[in-house]
Length: 336
View 1 (tube, one colour):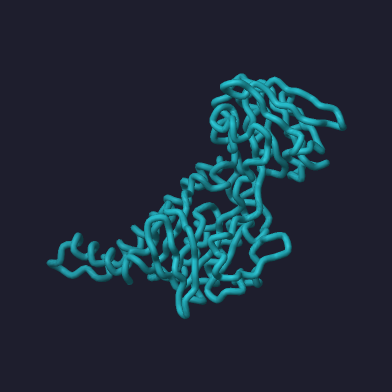
View 2 (cartoon, helix red, strand yellow):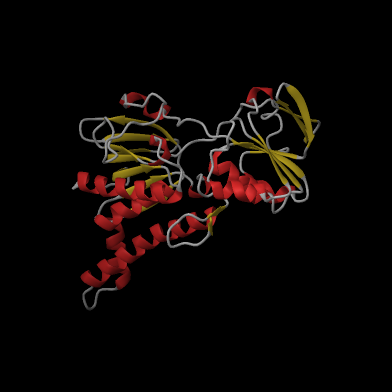
């Protein structure tokens, strides 16, 4: 198989995409797989401590992704060594055999190329990236949900000047400072709990009447003396202000304008999936804008599958791992 073709392209290199790759590889190690995306820019990598994975007591999101990347890379090595053992003949240098195996089976590859479009021909898909064009027999969409940006007044003006979209990435930069975190769900709850270790005061602004997070997170937030949660905050009424950097934030609470003196604002809002690069496929979507799938995670386009939150799956690490792995099994069967 040439360098500009593969059996499977996985769009998304986070928890779901990597789990799918491992499943496909274990079922058929002779399939050539390309994974598109930056693993350490995934939603899982930006989470704090994850405590709900069976068999793993507690792990930081970025460390978990690191382990998955190493596992994916080790599968290549393991398979190559097995093939060398089976094909090695006395008198033939192992290096020569290894080079031959690599040419025959360039199996798993993770690339950070940006996918610009995916189209369908009679027997394959054509993927256009910012650097290459490649043909593939099948595709798994596992991009997760993007950050919702450009929604808060002053957000764009103060990005990298006190405004961040990742509490776990940048929280330590605000050690001893007062900060605000905006959002809801387990993702923002984890972010607030992470920030409490560094920041003097954290105000969580929730746009709903509930955080919609696990009760264990709520209990921890309630017991945190430096965390205050405000509910039913209109996102349109929030304004970040300052001179060169963030100096404060205004928000409306119960028809009253409030003001906080803060040094940092973490915006942890999630958007609906951006599927513009699939526009030529006319893929069937749900009313909410997620990819519609069958029980085997296949879509309305033959050979195209979707896994994880991009199809509105619950954002829990074990579920995303299982959904990715399940999709990988079905794709491997489809390719066979």
